[in-house]
Length: 77
Image (cartoon, helix red, strand yellow):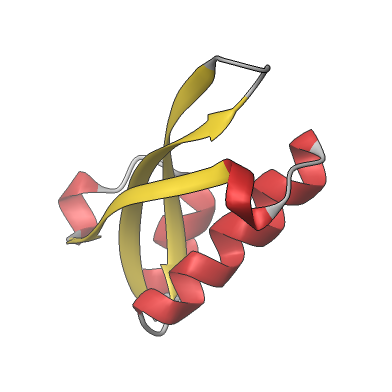
């Protein structure tokens, strides 16, 4: 698995958008997109059309902040 950081925004009201930056462990960018839609949709009761993903960036081990993502990408010893 690889580590990715996705940035974008999701709709919080009629005219307002909330920015987000989420780290995800996935095999490819399509998996990242699915996880973002699934997680934000279930947490905030959003449709996919209410979530805008602006950038998906592959990150290295020293850039990872989320401990769960670090564990999944590096594996346990």
